[in-house]
Image (cartoon, rainbow, N blue to C red):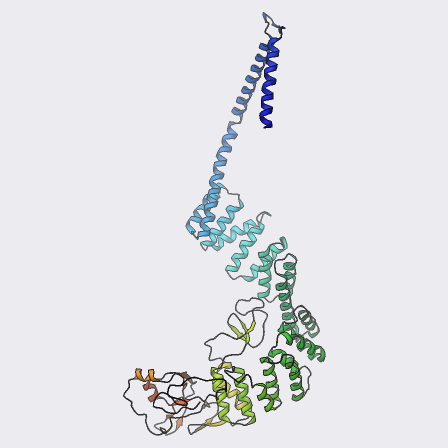
Length: 573
């Protein structure tokens, strides 16, 4: 609105001025040698205006002619730049889509159009890296380190390239240089921290973690837990050589994370070694309230060197009373009672744990109790048989690796604080000593004072050579061959009872020459269905399983209670 008003006002003023000049009576006299003119004022103004316009146009033409080479050069330069930007854009799209040939071709075009552009160098380096030309990629990334504008870009490229080649030392150096240049770069700070943790550089990791906290690259709770893990790792390394310094680190870790079991274990163990029993017990009990753990119970039991087994039992009972009803407390009391030979208390503590489906540790502990208290080998074998198929107890697990003791990093990925206390997944490592039936028997029975000789189906030999399994042949069929029921192998397999667990015991091979017998030490193989041919070749035995608990209905059997479906023959459980 204001512009329209101003435009109308300007037109009115111009019209008024022209009419004023036209109405003037005076004349302008212009003389020069040889003549003169006398135009009116209006004619003089119009003529002057025309002369000014002609001069302006002439000057513009002169400037355009003088600047035409530069304008032409600028025009071609702009066209070249547009072409280079198009090549860069297409090259980045090709990189994202994984088109190696297009990325390399467009990188060459971008290099011709924009040779000094940092993005051109990045495109060329990544295109070379995608094609597997690591030497060319490294050369291009290193060329970026020469200028401050592209230094960070080159460091990141070299860092990622080193990680791809698993050159962790070089990657750590590149990340450290990037952190020194700019501490606000999250990739550099966290990458350096991760690499320092993998190389167990705990002190360097603490310094980098402080940088991460200051610039909020990590959540406050996560950073606090990581600091406790690093301090615990340092305490573990120095526990045997520099106990005072290790105690300082462990104490700091406990203050940062009072419920962190490894920190409490290390701090309690070092305090106990230095004779500070009360301090050790205070740390253990504070952690036990929220995180009951068998390692805490061990430290509490041996917090005062020289104590009797009864003193250790009393201390464990006091600890377990802090978390009534918890499994770890009951197991700890049962273990301490076993060491104190208080069989009644041990059985009472395990009372709730043996119901239903007890775990591996419960079954093996019951086997030890039976071996020491009654020496009943049958009951011992029953519990060992249940232990073979029992669910595992929680252990320290990280990336599929199971360990008895905690470690600060995973042995597979090198990740910090990867070990967690949980039940391991099922795995096929049945040859492991911890899960081998033969090793269990050798470690549990022979070590508990049982005879080193046992009788297996009338044959006597070393205990470790004869697998102590109860041999039971079918009732009434000890000497007679099995009757043929007219069924094929496949039909016989289908009729086999699913709840029978058959254990193949190596046949005692009779020597034809000397008439002697020997056993072939083969691990027992658990199978559910046996073909008739296998039954004819190998002797069948059954593993005795402990009687089910009152609240455990047990498996349903097809042939009635205590009977198998085949022929109604009795089977003991």
